[in-house]
Amino acid sequence: MNAGEGFFDPAGASRLPADRWRDGMLEHGTELVADEVPVALSYNGISHAVMLASPQDLEDFAVGFSLGERIVHDARDIYDIEVDEAVNGIAIEMRIAGGAMLRLKETRRARTGKTGCGLCGVESLERFDDDTFATPIAGTREPGVTPDALHRAMAAMGQRQHLHHATGAVHAAGWANLEGELLCVREDIGRHNALDKLVGALVREGADVTRGFAVVTSRASFEMVQKAARAGFPLLAAISAPTALAVKVAQGAGVTLLGFVRGGRHVVYTHPQRIAPLAG
Image 1 (tube, rainbow, N blue to C red):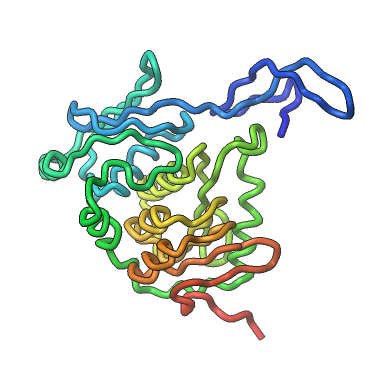
Image 2 (cartoon, rainbow, N blue to C red; image 1 turned 30 degrees about the horizontal axis):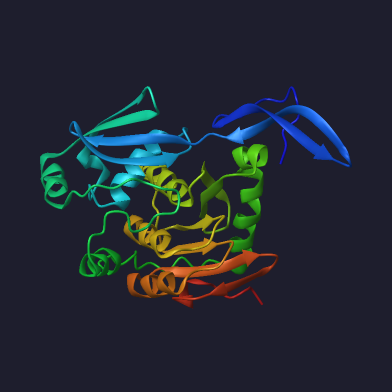
C-alpha cells in the first residue's frame, strides 16, 4: 500500500526512498514503511526483555505486557512507567510492587522478544505445560454476542487501522461492546504486541472487559488466546484461522474462540453458548 506524496504521515511510520514499478514504468519516489524498534522493558531497574514493536501507545504496551506475562497480577502493582528514547531504541522503566518484583526475580529468565515468538525463555516441556494451561478462567457472564455484532466490529476494524492503511505492515486488536460498536483499537507490527496494547489501554481506562469482545486481524495462535484469557476476555474473534493448541487453550480457559470472521461467515471453535441466535 502506498501513501501519496504530501499526505500526513501517521505516527509509527517513516518515509523512505523507493523505486516503484507500475504499468511498465519505473517511478522514483518515497514509500511509507512501518517503524520497528527495539523496546527494552525494565522493572525496578532490572532489565527483563527486549521486544520489537511499533513505537506508539507504549504505556499501554507496558501494562498489557506486564499483565500478559504475569509479571504483575493487577495493574495497580505498577506504580510508575517512564518511556525514554535510547540510542538504539526505546527504554521503558517500570516501578512495581515488592511482591511482584520478588515473583519476577524467582521466575526471571532471559528472553529476546520477536513479533511471532510465543515460547521465548521457556526452558523445558514441563514449564511450557505449566505456562500454557495454568490460565485463569475467563468471566462467567455470558455476553450473548450476535453474529451481526461480530461482523459489524470486524468490518469497522478496517476504518480504524490508520497505520496499516499507510504501510500495509501491521496488525490490529480491537475491543467492541455487545452491540458490535468498536470502542478501542491498537496497532503494532506484532499481533501479540497489538493485543498487549489493547489490554493495557482497557485496563488503564477501567473498562469492564466482561461486557464485550476482542477482534484481531491475525490468526489466533495459542499465546493470543492465553493473553485474552489472562485479561479476562470472554470472547476472541480472529479474522484468520486458529491453531489446534489455541482451541485447546480456549476450551480449558473458558474463552469463546472464533476464526475466519470475515465475508459474512465465521467458525465457532469453543464455548458457543456466548453466541446469541439471530432475532427471528
